[in-house]
Length: 345
Ligand code: SF4
Image (cartoon, rainbow, N blue to C red; front, side):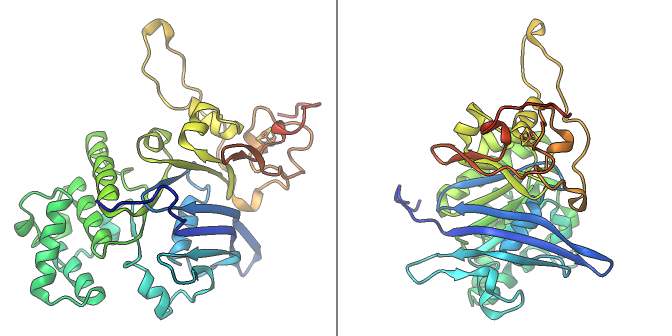
């Protein structure tokens, strides 16, 4: 297990990053607005929010896996794996050699549905062997030995025989384990996990979360974990950033955010988690009304205005500033700095 100093410096610092989508028929749409995120070795940052909040676009931007009509409009992504000056990933071309050296090797990704990421016409063993031959320059026999060891490490039973299976011959849980083995093949410094347990049943989900925690301790990697599930955040993360319609609306340590959620969206997400309680103490779950609007319909002010039960006069027109709440915890909401004079929702 690698020893990580308490004051280990961040390995990836995303600063003031905005991502826009362009279309020939309308103006550019800002899907992610001025996001600041920091990843440190051995720590997990969870990005949480409903579908359409910009979590996956943010995560994919780190590997520059954006759609052709998307681009990073401003900001930086400083990757600093060693003592050399950091590389600004935002400035690299998506198909450049320096980025290809980072992608899959230094920073890798686990996707939600392995069937769409693993090749259906190659065995899972061959797919990982190929990565090791390409990135680590191993001979085919050495690569297979490493693949089998990785399968053992991620808990695939009968690892040597399973290496000759095609993805469709495996259960969902085993496919996700194979995907994790592939992501870890080159011992990355940063692992991005994009809803890796969403498609799994709860038992397998718990096993995969345990596995990721264990592997993080073994490899000492930083993890960016994307999820819509605050229960999963509580299980796996050290820090959480809550996203809504492209904005990080609240961020802090999991302990602080869960103890004192300060943005109405975070509070609404928390109230929609089912809780165990005695019959007499049971309360109805309160879902968040409405749906996330399209980015082109984002109000000028606070992105959450159309669904917020506390919206008042400045919300629709004035974007709230980030308010520091102590200990690195912060949120963007007018309620933190002003008193509502007029309720509009
Ligand atoms: Fe609600 Fe206004 Fe706060 Fe936005 S700024 S979360 S609309 S109270």
